[in-house]
Length: 401
Image 1 (cartoon, rainbow, N blue to C red):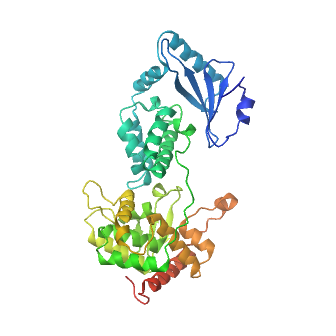
Image 2 (image 1 turned 180 degrees about the vertical axis):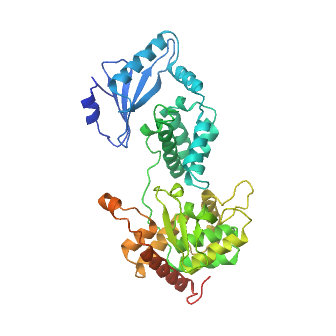
Image 3 (image 1 turned 120 degrees about the horizontal axis):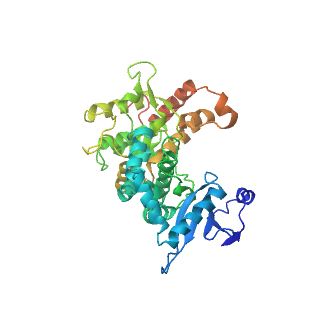
């Protein structure tokens, strides 16, 4: 562990080494700066209570939100508490309790105001809410976050990464002006628990044919809403979570010449509204979902009464369950169908930037600010090309199912 007489110039010059780096301040006993893998920086105080065998740590706040001077003042105040026998972590819990906001309350407000039902945040925050519901949000430390994520990563490493992203949003939201439920973001200095690799799985034409027919046959081992969701992903290139959370209120002109699915920004991964033109086959699948499901706001209803729409996680579980029945089809995930659809559209003549638009990969740089063209016409051509290609692949060219 490095040590130095910390200065603002030195703190600003520190860069991430890819992992977590810690530097101890030689001018303030116990004060340390942590630099996370993503480059974010946070002050902590390392201390040992009188008579205790092991040292403890308390997070002071993020830099530069908390200045070096403020961090030293906070560290000195906590050392006074330690001399009086008061544990800094207990002091923080006490202060947070007096503020009246628990993690469960803050997460609930976040989901209600920031996130729509069915959005990805809901499923990713279930575990943290169940474990931290009654904890004051200001008392949760980076060690608490790391412990939870590492436990999750033992069985579901990628899900643990997604939970980290959701927690980061909650704490950022909780720190904003007008709320200030938390004084720091403990997630910012916790690295992702799992390394992710770029997936390149595409289903070939024979696998698509087998899958489609099995989904139609009804003996694949999942209910009709799940089967329809997988087909809709393949016909629209939409993310699985967008499809499973589809609401009737998001559909427009279903009986007109330009049917569309408009996904509000609250349900989008990139926070921008997405307009998805619907091919005749995609429209037929959606209408089937609306007609066969129970009366609800969701297009694809869950068979469980405790929820309205089918769950994103449930869709992945359904695919894993059906895989043994899909002979000659290698392992795949619902998201692989999105990649497969994009590949098919490109193979059959859709321009690359049309496919990018349909995938809703946002423009960057100056184009993001000044180019407001929505490319609806090009996206409609893309879904039509995709539909024609898939119908040919599954052997129903000239028909729509």
